[in-house]
Length: 45
Image 1 (cartoon, rainbow, N blue to C red):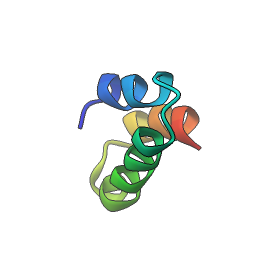
Image 2: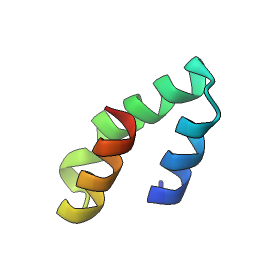
Image 3: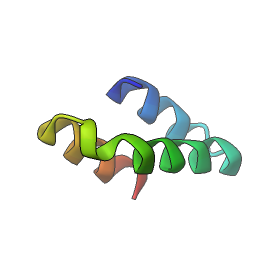
Image 4: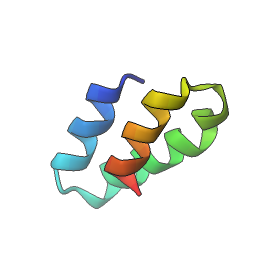
């Protein structure tokens, strides 16, 4: 999932979508580029 999509999930202010973004990040964070991971972590954590 791209950085843009994580952002879209978070701005919706829908708890289910935000939980989905957090779950997805936890599953793929080890495979992500370090700079992209930092940006996404700032959005979702």
